[in-house]
Each structure stands twice: as structure tokens, then as C-alpha cells.
Image (tube, rainbow, N blue to C red; front, side, top):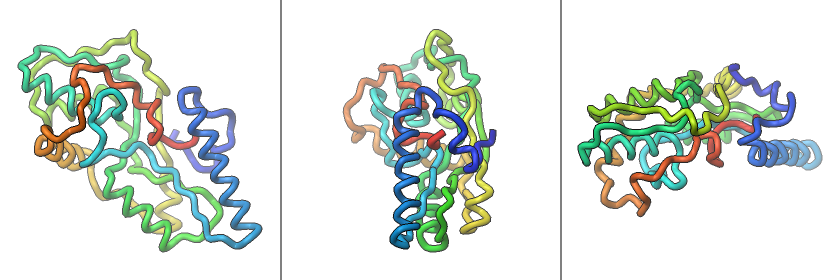
Length: 217
């Protein structure tokens, strides 16, 4: 760590991400072959975990940030004294705000013309315990956060080397995690009644099992 693009082919992908990772690697090989054979201007970027307004807040299949936001917000609204979260809180992840991700995709399409894949991320990692603490602070939940170590932690660490994106097409994330969380929570609060049906008490699945998270490694 941090994961570099040059390490993409070093071994089989992490088990929980293997099907998605192998498929993404196959797309990279296809894009590179079309570029070489036909001169197609395909570029390949690997975004890290995304979050932001209009995310999926259904706890049956949501990602870790919207899942934590909903669980803590609902627990606060019901006056619950404790909220149980998966794992032991030690795994780390990297998160990129959705508007930064959209800008990064546009920058890559407009300014980059190369066969090398490029990581798209924020350049930091945070533990699940620290993340839960930040969301807890923003939501204003006063209860206890209880970690359930019988639930899977998933990959111990995940963070990208984002230097190539900066060098090749000048991309850098602009939105801090605190700002991004505040904007995401504000959106959830405003649209809480409109959120698609989903049991607020259901356990969110581990973040590493979501199809849009992480790189192909």
C-alpha cells in the first residue's frame, strides 16, 4: 500500500473482489488491444470507493458510508442506545466524493490519451472505526457504537497511489471527507422519506463485496 497501477498483475485479486477484479482487468486488456490494433482512444481509470448525495441507502445492498449514515440516523431518531457494526473496525478504505469522481472521468476523457490504466482516488485511507466516528459526529448520535468481530472484516487495507492521475491529466480530489460526509448526510436528511424501501435494521454487507468499490486488485 498504496496500490500502484504497476502492481495490477501481481497475483490473483483479493478473494472477495476476485470476480469483479478479473472482469475489470479483462476490460483493460480489451481496451489496450483496440488501441493497438485500431488506434481507438480508449482510456481506463480505476475509481476507488465512491460516495455522495443520491447514493443507495437501502441497507440490503448499500455501500459502507450510506449504510452507516442510515443506521446511525435511524438509531438517533428512535432513541436507541447502541448500534452494531460489522467487523472489528480496523480495516481501512479510501473514499472519493462523487463530484470529484465525475470530474476525474471528464478530465481523463478530455486530457489523457494513453494505454496505461490510471487510479482515481482521494489519496488517503481511513479505518472503519474512524469513519464511523466521523459519521457519528456529523449525525449527532449519542449512543454506543458496538463492533461485531464475528462478522467479516474483508480486505485489511485498501488505498490507491493517485500520483499518475495528477501527472497524466492533472486530477486531484478537492472535497475533504468531512465536507463530503456533511453533504451526503444533508441530502439523506432532506430525502429520507423518499429513500427506496429497505429495512433500516438490516445489517449492511461488507464494503468490499459491493461491485462499485475498489480497484481490480
